[in-house]
Image (cartoon, rainbow, N blue to C red):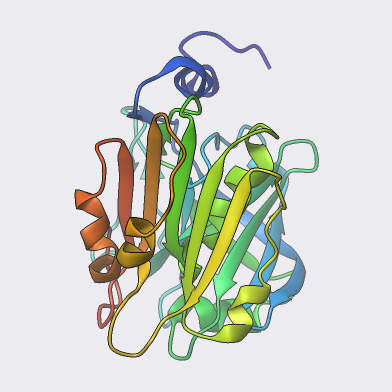
Length: 269
C-alpha cells in the first residue's frame, strides 16, 4: 500500500518522531464484521480474544491506546451497526445500540488479526460476552476513530493506569524504542491481576499497586517518583475519578477516563 504524507500512518509517525505533546489525528472509520478465532486467559482476571476476517484489510491503528467499539446485538438478536458517511464519520441508528470501547492490544495486517483484552468482572456486558465467546462467533466492531498521538521524543515517560489501560501500556512497550525510559505504575483491585504480561525493558521500572477499598494511590505514587532530568510525558488512564488528580501533574500529558465507577456507559472524562 502506498503511503503519503496525508496518510494517517505517516501523520502519526511524524508526530511520534518530531511532534510536541499530543495531536488529534483522524482515521478513516470502518465498520467490520469479524470472527473470534482464539481465546486465551492471559491473567486470572484478563481474557484475550483474537478476532480475524477479510474485512480487517485496510484497518487503521497506529497509536498504543487506539480503540474500537464493539456493537452488541439487541435483545432480539438484530445488530444495528453504524454506517460510515462521506465525512469519514459514522451515522449511528437511534436509539443507540449497546456498545463498549476496547483498546487494541495488537493488530497484524498480514494475518488480518485483531487482539483485544477484556478485564473480567461481574455484570459487565463486554466481560460477559468475552467469557462466553467461542471460536466461530461473529461480532461487529466500529473504528478506531483516530489517535490522540503523543510524541516519542520525550526523555522519560510516566504511565499511571489501572487494569483497563494495561493493553495500551503493553502495546506501547512492544512498539517503542528499546532504549526508552519510563516508569509504569499500575493500580489493580486484586493481587492476581499483577500477572498480566508486560515486556521487560532495561530502562523501564514497573510498580504494581493493589488499590485499597477507599481510595486510589495512583496520584501519590506519581508524586513519589524520583524522575530523571529532562522532558517528561505523563499518560494516565483508568477510572475517571481515580485519575482526575493526574490532570494537574505536569504540562505534557494525556489523561483519559476509560470508565467511571457506578456508570455503565461512561464515554471518557
